[in-house]
Length: 107
Image 1 (spheres, rainbow, N blue to C red):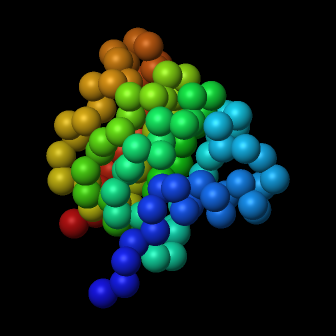
Image 2 (cartoon, rainbow, N blue to C red):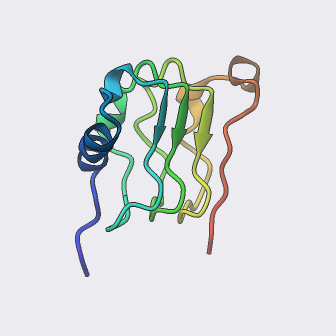
Protein backbone atom coordinates (compact mmCIF):
# COMPACT_ATOMS: atom_id res chain seq x y z
CA UNK A 1 0.00 0.00 0.00
CA UNK A 2 1.39 3.43 -0.92
CA UNK A 3 1.96 6.20 1.55
CA UNK A 4 -0.70 8.93 1.43
CA UNK A 5 -0.04 12.52 0.45
CA UNK A 6 0.47 14.83 3.42
CA UNK A 7 -1.30 18.18 3.70
CA UNK A 8 2.15 19.82 3.57
CA UNK A 9 2.94 18.07 0.27
CA UNK A 10 -0.49 18.88 -1.17
CA UNK A 11 -0.12 22.56 -0.21
CA UNK A 12 3.34 22.75 -1.81
CA UNK A 13 1.93 21.27 -5.02
CA UNK A 14 -1.05 23.67 -4.88
CA UNK A 15 1.30 26.65 -4.45
CA UNK A 16 3.38 25.54 -7.42
CA UNK A 17 0.33 25.11 -9.67
CA UNK A 18 -1.55 28.22 -8.55
CA UNK A 19 1.39 30.60 -8.15
CA UNK A 20 -0.09 31.71 -4.80
CA UNK A 21 1.11 31.30 -1.23
CA UNK A 22 -1.23 29.03 0.69
CA UNK A 23 -0.88 31.12 3.86
CA UNK A 24 -2.33 34.13 2.00
CA UNK A 25 -5.01 32.40 -0.09
CA UNK A 26 -8.72 32.63 0.66
CA UNK A 27 -9.72 29.51 -1.30
CA UNK A 28 -7.71 26.29 -1.46
CA UNK A 29 -8.73 23.13 -3.28
CA UNK A 30 -6.88 19.93 -2.42
CA UNK A 31 -9.31 17.60 -4.15
CA UNK A 32 -8.55 14.12 -5.47
CA UNK A 33 -4.91 13.97 -4.42
CA UNK A 34 -2.94 10.99 -5.76
CA UNK A 35 -2.07 9.30 -3.54
CA UNK A 36 -4.97 10.46 -1.36
CA UNK A 37 -4.64 12.65 1.72
CA UNK A 38 -5.24 10.38 4.71
CA UNK A 39 -4.78 12.80 7.63
CA UNK A 40 -5.60 16.42 8.33
CA UNK A 41 -2.21 17.38 9.76
CA UNK A 42 -0.85 20.46 11.55
CA UNK A 43 0.06 22.10 8.22
CA UNK A 44 -3.56 23.28 8.07
CA UNK A 45 -2.77 25.80 10.84
CA UNK A 46 -0.84 27.91 8.31
CA UNK A 47 -4.04 28.66 6.38
CA UNK A 48 -5.11 31.62 8.51
CA UNK A 49 -6.69 33.56 5.60
CA UNK A 50 -8.51 30.59 4.08
CA UNK A 51 -12.29 31.03 3.95
CA UNK A 52 -13.01 27.99 1.73
CA UNK A 53 -11.08 24.73 2.06
CA UNK A 54 -11.90 21.78 -0.17
CA UNK A 55 -10.47 18.41 0.83
CA UNK A 56 -13.05 16.30 -1.00
CA UNK A 57 -12.37 12.93 -2.60
CA UNK A 58 -9.45 11.81 -0.46
CA UNK A 59 -9.13 9.15 2.26
CA UNK A 60 -9.49 11.29 5.40
CA UNK A 61 -10.96 9.36 8.32
CA UNK A 62 -10.79 11.90 11.14
CA UNK A 63 -11.42 15.65 11.31
CA UNK A 64 -8.49 17.29 13.13
CA UNK A 65 -6.17 20.32 13.21
CA UNK A 66 -8.76 23.01 12.46
CA UNK A 67 -7.61 25.31 15.30
CA UNK A 68 -5.66 27.74 13.10
CA UNK A 69 -8.39 28.18 10.49
CA UNK A 70 -9.80 31.37 12.01
CA UNK A 71 -11.30 32.69 8.75
CA UNK A 72 -12.80 29.42 7.53
CA UNK A 73 -16.43 29.59 6.42
CA UNK A 74 -16.73 26.58 4.10
CA UNK A 75 -15.10 23.21 4.72
CA UNK A 76 -15.74 20.59 2.06
CA UNK A 77 -14.99 17.00 3.08
CA UNK A 78 -17.29 15.03 0.81
CA UNK A 79 -16.19 11.64 -0.50
CA UNK A 80 -13.78 10.83 2.30
CA UNK A 81 -13.81 8.07 4.92
CA UNK A 82 -15.04 10.23 7.83
CA UNK A 83 -16.23 8.01 10.66
CA UNK A 84 -17.65 10.72 12.95
CA UNK A 85 -18.21 14.45 12.88
CA UNK A 86 -16.19 15.22 16.00
CA UNK A 87 -13.31 17.63 15.51
CA UNK A 88 -15.41 20.49 14.17
CA UNK A 89 -15.49 22.30 17.53
CA UNK A 90 -12.66 24.75 16.66
CA UNK A 91 -14.83 26.17 13.89
CA UNK A 92 -17.32 27.52 16.42
CA UNK A 93 -21.07 27.67 16.18
CA UNK A 94 -22.99 27.52 12.91
CA UNK A 95 -23.89 31.21 13.24
CA UNK A 96 -20.19 32.07 13.09
CA UNK A 97 -19.79 30.11 9.87
CA UNK A 98 -23.31 30.55 8.46
CA UNK A 99 -23.77 26.80 8.88
CA UNK A 100 -21.76 26.18 5.75
CA UNK A 101 -19.36 23.45 6.75
CA UNK A 102 -20.20 20.76 4.21
CA UNK A 103 -19.29 17.21 4.99
CA UNK A 104 -20.27 13.78 3.84
CA UNK A 105 -18.66 10.39 3.95
CA UNK A 106 -18.54 7.29 1.83
CA UNK A 107 -18.62 3.87 3.33
